[in-house]
Amino acid sequence: MTKLAMDGGSPVRTDPFPPRKLFGREEREAVTALFDRAETEGHTVLGYNGPEEEAYCREFAEFLGGGFADGVNSGTNAVYVALRAMEVEPLSEVIVPAITDPGGAMPVALCNCLPVPSDGAPGSYNIGAEQIAQRITDKTRAILVAHIAGIPADMDPILELAKKKNLLVIEDCAQAHGAKYKGKFVGTLGDAAAFSTMFGKHHATGGQGGVVFTKNERMYWRIRRYADRGKPFGLENAGGNVVPSLNCNMDELHAAIGRVQLRKLPGIIQRRRRLAKQLIDGCKMLQTMRILEEPADMEAVYWFLLLQLDRPRLNVDVETLTRALQAEGIAATAGYFHVPMWAPWVKHPHAFAPGLHPREWTLPNIRATDADFIKLPLHEDFTRREVDDILTALKKLESAYRK
Ligand SMILES: Cc1ncc(COP(=O)(O)O)c(C=O)c1O
Image (cartoon, rainbow, N blue to C red; front, side, top):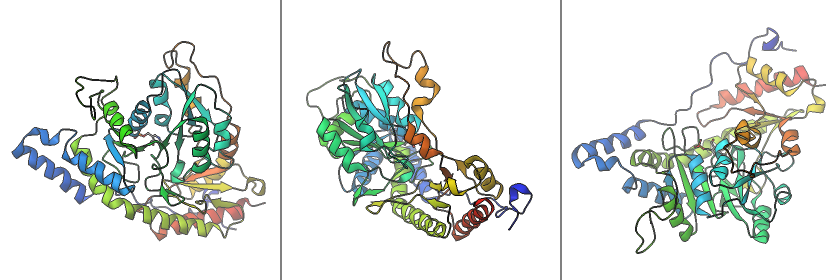
């Protein structure tokens, strides 16, 4: 048996994995063109609510098969604006995912509502209808569903439950640009959707950014108002600022970058899916590990990969296995335990209105799921060599630790 790098053996990989090269000449040219125009036409070319954003939003909506999009300045603010646009009354309860980015749950508190975490579906990082149903009370008004790691949540039962209980559904597609559920793009299934377009996402508008999407035109105009301090977009004869909100606007530079990136998005998705498939298929040779795969009726876009361990058949805990993988040169991390409702902010005395502090929720499914998973890196600039190195390292670890 080959000696593990952790025990002094040679690592599978000694040189770093390739960096992600998301931005390039075309993005630079789009930005330079805007600056060139600003020099001749004036500074408003670099403003906001302008033609670049209009085009980006139209193209974004076309990508999703039609609807309405509004550019904002982060994924967190996309969630905030989508929620505000639902006009959920203060002190309502909003179901949030057990596992999500803080920006996928905190906006609920900032809307003067109570975030209530749903547990995950068994064996999944996504929430499921059965677990959501257990959290619904007569104060619940909306459900926030995140498609974690680019794998769609099982939306049909969630939508059915929402319909039955008269609840609004916001899809958080920050990690799932272009993923499909039963042939339909995620983000088109609920009442509105929030996308993050910060630089780590499938397509980006620069360092930061986000998009709010809906198929409902009335909702769209509310989104516009709440994204820009309540300006009376879509209202006839209304003057002044009609609702209280923040300035969440995207600007023209970010929209110009986003337009280039949207053209690249299908290729990015295709390459990620191909690499993920090679790794998933490669892992099928192993007895004790598998990579979480899209269910038969879904198309995942794999923001990262989740390696599931058959722990009873391994002589090692997740942390040690992760360290062993890292020693082999693979940037793995143990689990993906991002539980915003267990973070210190929830207990901050000013986080919620008096009397509205959330109770402490237990989330047994998510805890159990996370104990079996390792997060593996993936991006579209990986090559067959990175795939082979990951598989070689996994094989090496399996032969070292298999019972
Ligand atoms: C599921 C989810 N929701 C919301 C966000 C927040 O997006 P942003 O970082 O653009 O504010 C993220 C960011 O990674 C996310 O993954």
